[in-house]
Image 1 (cartoon, rainbow, N blue to C red):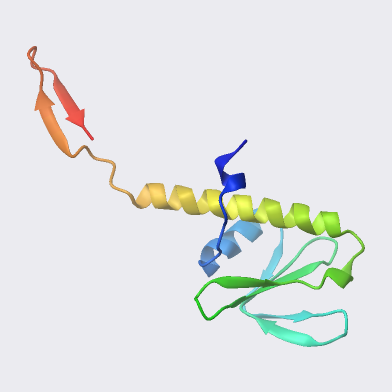
Image 2: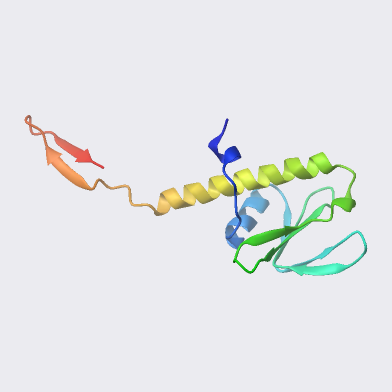
Length: 123
């Protein structure tokens, strides 16, 4: 089992979310409008549309995280929504982890020489 499947993913980075959605072949609008089943229209910081026309929107919550706006009445395939969201969240989490690893300085904290003069790194 992937570690990314068991970790909760809170989306906070709008640029990283956009990058993830574009890589998953979504049409992305920033900012955008999302229409609901009742024909109400809501503004969102980011709206993603898949090839079937399904729209998902994200807006900032008071804690700074991005919350999902999705009208489950848009389509009859609720399992499809879950699959799409799992794919997006896993890809976002992976990109976030890779970005964090790139930003981390991985140089050794201490360098020593053993009896034969070989240099060893202690991290």
